[in-house]
Image 1 (cartoon, helix red, strand yellow):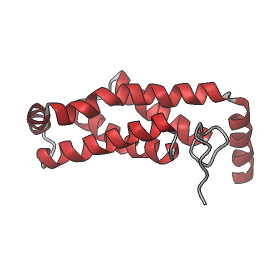
Image 2: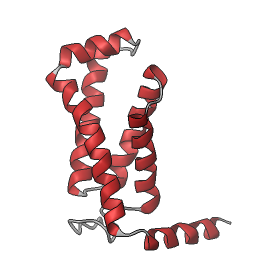
Image 3: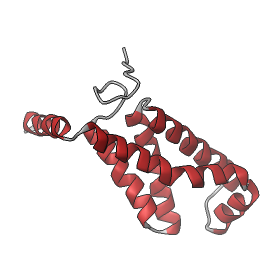
Image 4: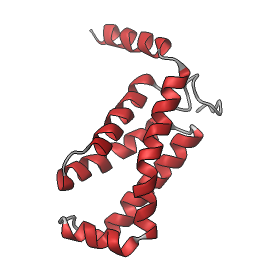
Length: 135
């Protein structure tokens, strides 16, 4: 059964054109970039918002969430370890859903991140624009 699933995923990654995977990566980066930057550009209001919705240690959590998001955006745009970048956004979005509720943005980021992981668009895949290889 595991081999069947593995073969199915391999065939899906071979069918999906490179431009679709690129579009997913850039779409996620576009959705995440503004809130990521705002955590630093309007730090005090972000801390106040985190505090108001009940996130513990709001000052530290704004910095942590913003750093994860900015790093992921840069990695997605440059095509560097996209699997890791996508995976790092999932817990951030799950926290957003838990504290604020689901909306199209956090659901789209989670869905797109899972698509990146399943489609293996990371640096070790043939679709990496920089042609980076791990190893």
